[in-house]
Amino acid sequence: MKKLLSLGLLSAVLGGFAGLASAQDSQLDLIAKGKQVATAADCQACHTNAEGGKAFAGDYPIQSPMGTIFTTNITPSKKYGIGNYTEEQFSRAVRDGVRPDGENLYPAMPYTSYSHMSDDDIKAMYAYFQHGVEPVEAPTKITALPFPFNMRIAMAGWNMLYLDSSAFKPDPSKSDEWNRGAYLVNGAGHCDTCHTPRNLMMGEVTSKPLAGGMVGPWYAPNISADPVSGIGNWTQAQLVEYMKTGRTLGKNQAAGPMAEAVQNSLQYLPESDLNAIAFYLKNSTPVRDPADKQAADSFGPKQVNVENGLRGAHPYNANNTIIGGAALFSGYCASCHQPDGGGSKNQAYPSLFNNTATGLTNASNLISAILYGVDRKVGDQHVLMPKFGEGSYVGQLTDAQIADISNYVLTNYGNPDIQVTEHDVAVLRGGGPVTLLAKLQPFMAPAMVIGVVVVLLLIFWLVRRRKTRTR
Image (cartoon, rainbow, N blue to C red; front, side):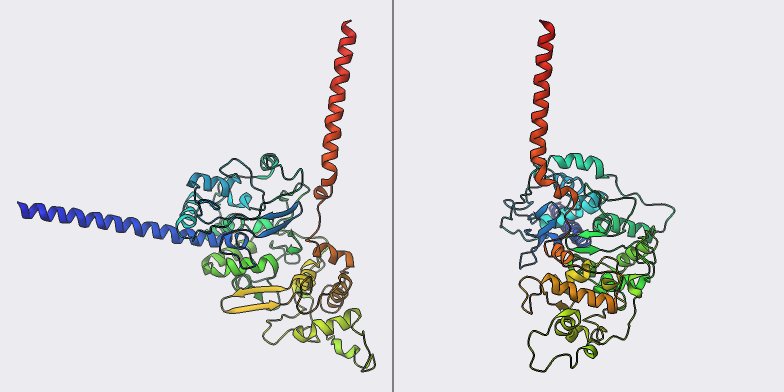
């Protein structure tokens, strides 16, 4: 009898250990899935300061038309991060843009896309951030937008206009691959957040999905299926290669925010997800920009060698001769991109023709690449083009010089119908175009004061009038 009891007790103990081990394995699986979801959602790119910040510790400055927004610490630090968030509070912040204290987040946090994420993905991501990320005990800079943009309560009204909080519903008439791509592009991967144009109130123009838009000084190009304005002339394999490596020969190379997306997110996605995204984009609604005459990557070589027009132009001992687009291109660009614009042999420094950066009707990415450089790490490959804007260790170029180089490149290797001005460069050097709403900001407070005074005077007049009638 004792032997049977002992065996029973041993069996119960072993069963308990087995149950505990099973629960631990299940939790580890959930955390691993959460890491995959957070990678697809590209959380690290925005919540990690590129200047040596720790993972997910925040302090990344986002240049918005309304001012600089600093991202928050989303590590499990209970003092500075989200360590005290419940799963429900985490879900509400991610999908509804509302913090546990009831304050609204700014839509620089792409909750308008994350709102379509599934309950399972939110649960897994919560487990990852609570148990799979190292807490960082460090505060972040406080976002302080000018009045009235600092009134977060106004975001409640904005959400009523532009937040679609409906869950993603697969289209039964489409394939599993299409539905997975739709979920990633418009949900977790939030491609639509950057690549869809914005209206006056900074809401997405839903009638032009994925038709392109400015993100600070960079242009997120049209990625709809249109063969001229979008990626309709790309193959699915080329799109996958671009997302995986950050470049595709004869098409484009990732820079700015897209380089961050490739570096921190896209290169780590499984091939099935990359193919799903590419398949969905190839089958998306085409949106054509009337200004586009031909595909941006179709501007081919014109057999122009910059050195042919410069040799012998000045005495060998002349000074101050690097003036004009050709001389500036020769002095600052040709050593890497080659005198004929063909790029290096391995295309680490890409060709300047058959290149969407030079062939678009929007020259922002060409200008910003010169101003801010290109810095992209994929696997063991590090692509680096030095910047020629503020703080350059190569040479700080003026707005006029960058405009001259840009126009030389556009005329000889890209879209010759586009001309860059000093003002264009100055706008991008300052962080990007200022929207009408931001331009009106200095007048909003006085207008509100005048409005209050007018209302008070009207009330006073009505009261006086009523008193006069009752006498």
